[in-house]
Length: 88
Image 1: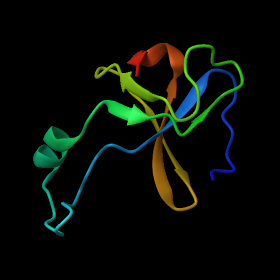
Image 2: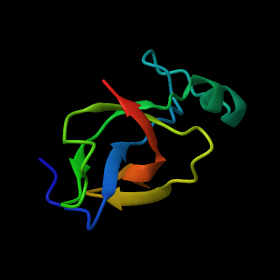
Image 3: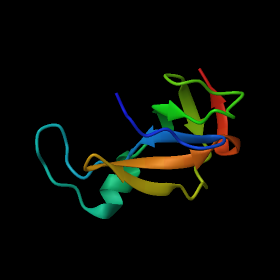
Image 4: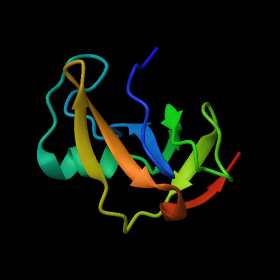
């Protein structure tokens, strides 16, 4: 469980970039970008989020410039709720 709680309508998402395959092959930046996805699980949401709840699967606008944050030595994305295109 993440102790960090975002303010306002910010949403914490897992870092979608993969630098290594499941079998351990290290990927170059171009390949890693091609394998990244914009469909992610909302890990934690701010108190002002009205559309998204923790645990929802969301689609992030691929043009979004997310804020990279490090929590407990892991990297995450921090995006505003308005940057989400939809949810499942």
